Amino acid sequence: MDFIKTAVAIGAGAIGAVFLAPVALGTAGFTSAGITAGSIGAKMMSVAAVANGGGVAAGGMVASLQAIGAAGLSGAGTIAVASTGAAVGFLTRFFR
Image (tube, rainbow, N blue to C red):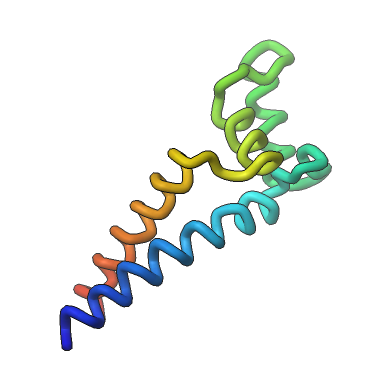
């Protein structure tokens, strides 16, 4: 029975992370229409622009989050997010 609970926790963590990652990015302001004014994403972009002399570096964190917010997770990104969610689901079994 403990094996089944652990498997359910791992599965729920993986599936939940894959579905909630785009929601979290959208909430932070990284949308398909661009970065939402006044959002956490806009503040991050402002800090990155000041640090880089006025522009946001391609391949940086802000640019990567915006790309994911606009186009969704890639296959490798989905695997990474699901793996992280599965690990969190597994670890929660020890803190109940």
